[in-house]
Structure formats: C-alpha cells, structure tokens
Amino acid sequence: MTSRIEEIRKLLFTQKKVLVNDLSVQFDISRVTIRKDLQQLEDEGIAKRIYGGAVLADCALPSSLSNAKDRTRIALAERACEEIQDGDSIFLGSGQTCCYLAKLLERFHNLSIVTNNITALNDLLKTDARVYLLGGEVTSTDAHTLFSSPENPNTFTNHVFVSKAFTSISGIDLQAGLTVHSIVSTHIYRNLPSIARSWYLMADSHKFGQIAMYPVADLDAFQYLIADDVPENYRTILHQNHTEILLI
Image (cartoon, rainbow, N blue to C red; front, side, top):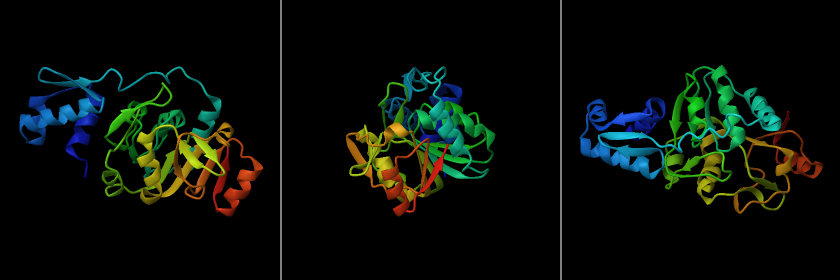
C-alpha cells in the first residue's frame, strides 16, 4: 500500500503544487500533520514550502539529460528493455544509464516501478506504471542526475520486493568488487540481492578496473551483466559465478 508521503510526493511531481487544505481533506488528517509531511519533503529537497502549501523544488527535475546523447548508455538501456515484460515489478537505480532506461519504459504496460532516481521520475510518470519513489537524503555524484536513499535501510528491505532490478555502477574491479562514489547510495546496492529476484547490472567497458570510494557488493551478487564489452579476465570470473553476460 502506498504511504501518504509517497502519494504527496507523486502529486508534487505531477501537479507541481499542493495545498495544505486540499491534502488535509484528501487524506482525512489534520493540517498540522500535512505541514509536517511537507517539511519532510522540503528536507529531502523535493518540495519548497509556500504559504498554504508547497511547490516542486527547482532542483527536483533537472533537465540536464534532455539534450544529452550517449550512444553506449542508450544501447545499454535498449538491451535492458529486452529483459522487461508487461506487468513486471522492477527497481530502477540512479545514474544516467537508468535515466535513459526510464525514457524507454513508456512502451510497456502495467509495470510496478520502485526507484530512487529523482531525475527519471518525470519520464516514469508518463507511463501507465505504478511508481514508488523512495524517500531519504537527496544527492548527486555526476552534476547531471539526482537520487535519494533511505536513511533507514529497513524501510527499504522490509517493504519492497521486485522481480527485476536494473542499476548502473561506478566501478567494477576483480578485488574491490562493485563500488560507488556516494555513501548515500550504499544502502540501496547492499540490499538489492535481498529485494530483487534478478539483478541486472548495466555497465560500459570503461567501468572495468575502476574503483570508486565505497564498496557495495561482490562480483557474484548480480545475475546479469549488460555491457558493450567485457575483458576476458572478468568473463572468466563471471562465468564461474554463473553470471549471464548480455552484450549490446
């Protein structure tokens, strides 16, 4: 069941403005409680409070990707679409590759999408999917995309299970495993194996041998790797881990 704060968050993204009185009537709760909800959304960077309500924060829907073109990332997203069927429940991670995937999901029907990708939300809401945005601290690691991460991982792992998770990654290394640049996103990655039946990792060939600051998973944590090319020594390890390689 979608929580009240998630419903208000979605209303902000779709309507760009919400009013305390209207929300109080809609959810049959006090205006004081609604104001606390709006304060929480402002703390997350989603809302900007105004007299009588709140508006969507200017930074909540950046347009940095609107004119960006990256053939490899787009190809990775297209290959990921081959693994998605109508009616799937999926987790969509942060980063530019996942933003490109979000733009392609309009071709599917009856999806249930859990995401922490704030930048992708505008495209996700164009679909007929049920979209659930994870709350928490909002940050960016690439100056192009925003994402959130729950401060308490139990709110994520205890209430979410999806058939497929699609994420990108900052670095893949034989010794360090999977690594990311932001400590905020570590909660998500470390809990993905417990909330998804299948984890699809999307990575271009430049990510191999790269090490970011924070380790989040071993190389046997994901079931599928979507890539443009994979070095031979990594192929050997992935084969031993029974990880299926899906090349674009």
